[in-house]
Length: 274
Length: 341
Image (cartoon, rainbow over all chains, first blue to last red; front, side, top):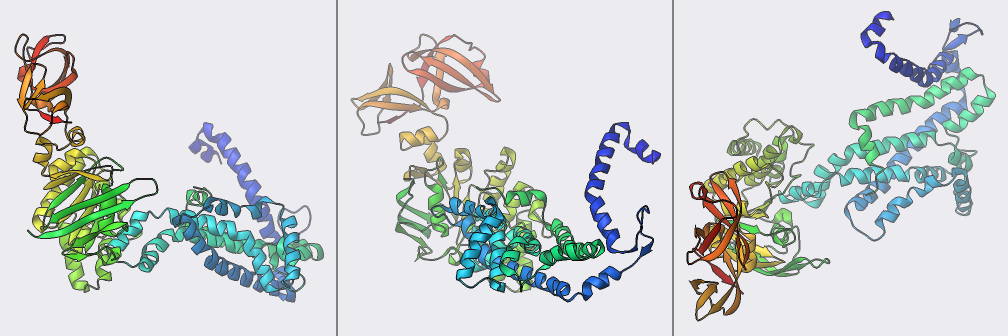
């Protein structure tokens, strides 16, 4: 340890302490979770479990409804992502390229679903869903997830499309490309990082969504976060830990993947209204 | 005379009130013509109409005798170099150049040969594998010019292509463009707000103002005989003094000049700074007092307060200003004047 302090110099000690506190604060719970998930036997004063085991993993995967919820969650998240791409990318392109009255107002209105307490919004939506027979249906669950992600899915790609300069599109027209070819070969590839990030956001958001699904999907459509509630109350903490890891893993994998394509400022620019 | 591009009574109005009205212009094959004017004068509107990026309200555009007004930009025999953002950052230089050729279904062997040749023409051989972000601003514009050259357009359009570059580079690029034009014999329409740029590269200059053409002439003629007060103000440096025309003579105080125009009465008289002669006080010229002397390298700019006519600026050779000092009285003569209403 002494060589480390020598290397960083006395002035940096405070920074080192701050970093250490930060790491423990963020990583501590995750580490604890990881240990719990692989515990066979762990008695109170011991620092680490006395017996390691995969038995809670086997337990979780053997529960019918749990296994089913994992599959369902991924299917729903994939569908929500696909549908919102189809809906929002053309809208984002329109916001970026076409001048129409009240465009700024419409773009801003996507924030509204995030401006009110979620539960209040969902209850009023539920009233509508009852009327249209959407309660306890896959369509209903997907719809409520899409409402949640409209903002990401429109704002980020809009900004990505705006970053493609019109001269870049025009010079492609100029060398002979049809409008469709320009979109396919120039605009879309240049905006792709933004669209990819928005899609990852959407996928993760849908995977994590609990409140709306709980209200609209119960009893037939129990996704992972909903099953999580009952696991926490009905089973030992070890099972909860295993399940948490299953729930967190896709987020971490996808976010690490997204980092390759996008820097934080690209993400931030998605939230500028111009 | 071989007319390559003919613009006939072109009009385009924007909601803001800007635009162009009734523009007519013929460009000969192999000619480099410049549209010159301040921002908002309509020069870019004309250029974008030729390229197909704007639909004119009225008028016609003919290229090699065929009307192109209804033709979309990708089908027009024109190619445009924009002010910036010409290249596609997700493609290598080679792919940027190949894009248009692939659309035209040029065979790979011919395509590669053409790309090699054009890269040499713009003095960037070996840049093919680089990405636009790895090139300097000047290199990027060269690639943009190369991409247009590859398509062998009937008319090459250039929209202030060098305005984002620094002065020295801009100068070099002008020379290179002129050389390329001489080698290829391409017809070019060049837009700029920089009168020096226009004077240095053009075969003919079209001076525009508020959506109208003020004058179309060779650089020399535009400089020597500006047709309107606006052109006189816009091109080069010019002094303006009040004068009167009577009995076929232009009169400024004690000075008399022949009047080639049909004007009469009160006029504005324009004099180039190099056409001003500074004599010892007491001569037959206008009395003046030296206010300031600025040395500008091989010549000097002398500000003279002409009593009753305001301050004028005169260019003098370095050896002529040795005897001048601030506050000195002079007699001022004009070698050549032009009168405007």
